[in-house]
Amino acid sequence: MLASLLAMVMNPEPWTPPPLEQRQLRGWTPRVQAQKDIRQQEENRLEAHTIRGMEDVATHVKTHIMWLDIEIKKLEKEIDDHIDQHPNLTPAPALGYLRPRSRPKLQTIACHGHDPRLR
Image (cartoon, rainbow, N blue to C red; front, side, top):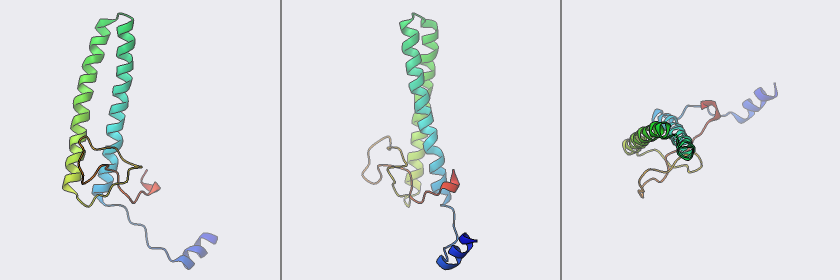
């Protein structure tokens, strides 16, 4: 009841979701971070296997790390291209990740307008 009274008094604008390009960007950003986290885990495993003399396992881990490096670069390029195609995206450093190459036009890629209902 109190909420409905408050809504009548404040008369808020109806909520509209962020544009699709912004939501897509928010979807890709955590994917890159997840891949980087997995890569770090594999680096740690590689060190442990190398120390223990398990070269056959270490070789397999190295192969996975190389594959992850390729995938991370692909994702970063896709994100970079997405930003280039949508110049209306604005930076919000607290939510984003740094672009793989430095450019003056945008240093981060997360966008303003965060709404917790999108999680």
